Image 1: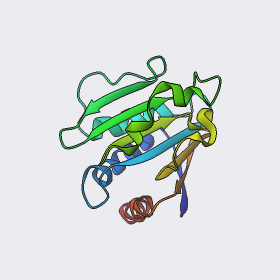
Image 2 (image 1 turned 135 degrees about the vertical axis):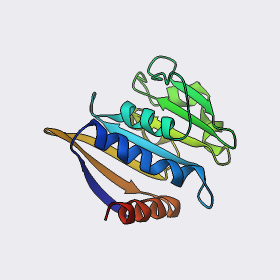
Image 3 (image 1 turned 120 degrees about the horizontal axis):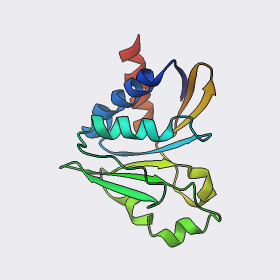
Image 4 (image 1 turned 180 degrees about the horizontal axis):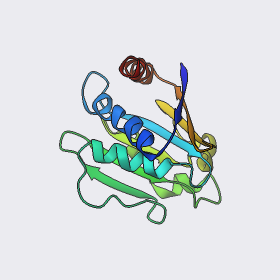
Length: 160
C-alpha cells in the first residue's frame, strides 16, 4: 500500500509526523521501523524531530549525523533515531552494532539514509521518501508491513 502526500510547508511536515505518534505509541501495532529517504534538506530530520516531540521527547533533539544514533526513553518503549549518511560502505552498518535495536520489542526506529546500508538492513514497516516539489515537499509513503498498512489507513481517514 502506498500513498503520496504534498507538504506545502514546514507546518504540513510537522502535522504529518504528529499524526503518526498515536499510531506508533499504542497497541495493537506499538513501535515500528520507518526509513526516511530523500536529498539533503528534503525534511528527513525535521520529520523525525516532529515525530519524536509528538511522542513526548522533551529537551533538545539532536541530529544523529555525527553520533550515528540518538536514543530516547519514552517510558513504555524506546525510540532510536539513526542516520547513515556518513557510511562510505554498507558493511559499516554491521560494524556499528545497531542490529539489536531492530529486534527490540515495541521500539520505534527512525532511519535516515537507509540506502547507505543497502540491503543489509531489515525491511521497514514504512518507507517515507521526501522530495522537493516547490514550494514544498512531496512525501511518498510506502507501507511494507500490515502494521504500516493500518497506519496509512488511519492517516487517510484522519485527513478526509
